[in-house]
Image 1 (cartoon, helix red, strand yellow):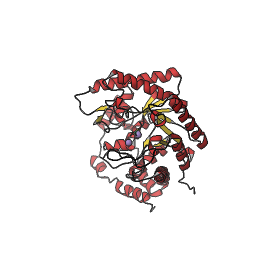
Image 2: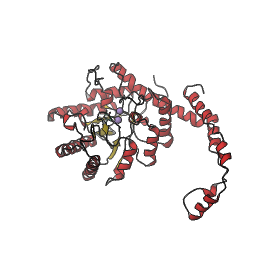
Image 3: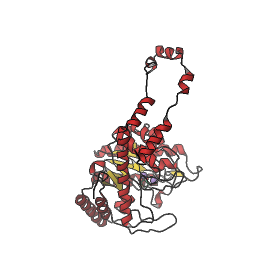
Image 4: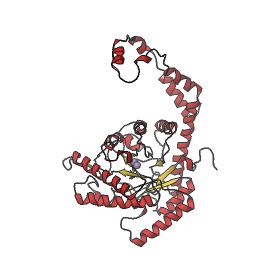
Amino acid sequence: MSDIYSPRPEHKFTFGLWTVGNTGADAFGEAVRSHLSAADLVYLLGEVGAYGVNFHDNDLIPIDATASERAAILKAFKKALSDTGLIVPMATTNLFGNPVFKDGAFTSNDPKVRAYALQKTMHAIDLGVELGAGVYVFWGGREGIETDAAKDPVAATKRFREALNFVCEYAIDQGYDLKFALEAKPNEPRGDLYFATTGAYLGFIETLDHPEMVGVNPEMAHEQMAGLNFMHAVAQAWEAGKLFHIDLNDQNYARFDQDWRFGAQNLKQAFFLVKFLEDVGYAGSRHFDAHAYRTEDHEGVKDFARGCMRTYLILKEKGARFNADPDIQTLLAEINADDGSVDALKGAYSAAKAAAIKAHAFDREAIATRGLQYEKLDQLTVELLLGVR
Ligand code: GLT
Ligand code: MN
Ligand code: MN
């Protein structure tokens, strides 16, 4: 049965093969769900109403596949895409799973590893573009350290820059219409990862040869692991024109990378995030980089995927309610009221304006004693979210 919270293609909900394909294996236990082929996962995503599917090179083609195995997998995958109507908006490289990357890929101390990482990435870019990807993600899962005795962080930064510049030139040379999106994480699987936050990447991007080709892919749980407000990271990326992609999920703060169903834990933060994306008109994929609880079978995986999308759409509707709620909007208008008395003091610097600001007589006490009514506003928000207004 479909209702207003049912996913439609225009919502741009996507999942990685590694998300619905997650078998539940963790550091302490074995797989609890059987492995499904890439084609089977596309049919599963078609059944739950997703719009797109993303992959790492080796989610689709195993690292040691023969040419004929590769051809058979690709044929089945392409058939599943055309049977379901799903598209591939994003692709990425697995530069973390194989032992060769145990000390990083682009930041490895070993030049052979760095060159191999470039080779693997160029092949993976070719594969992604062949299947239609317009965004290419880099998550540097092993780009970090356990001990700072081992690696020079300045050298690591320079190596990472050289690699990014290389792949940008490669994409230009091939005539690919491709953008790159960098995904930060503070730690796990390394003790510390370089470029720990989205903000760190936003600074780094401006040092590249082609900054216009490179943006970010912020992940909710990754900023939460660092104790940060995810929506603020997303807002800074958006304001800089760098929000090329987004990984939605959830988790408890200050824990390991839990990658839970969107909205499973921090509903109020999820609400402000969805409201932000919808209010500004973010037009990219809403990618759920999460997986089902380890307790689930394949039906539970579908429940997980449906839940991510449904919660997003419920929160989107709550955002529209917030924007239309007369009490909330009246309060916001009062909070933001401006009597125009300091209009002459606003705006860009001029020597005259600096002098006028220095000379102005501010009634500091009157300004400071005004109550801002944020308690009332927040309670109205909570009541709206709890469904009583
Ligand atoms: C891995 C990681 C994710 C990244 C994926 C892309 S792989 O699952 O935990 O956050 O987005 O490389
Ligand atoms: Mn994660
Ligand atoms: Mn992610």
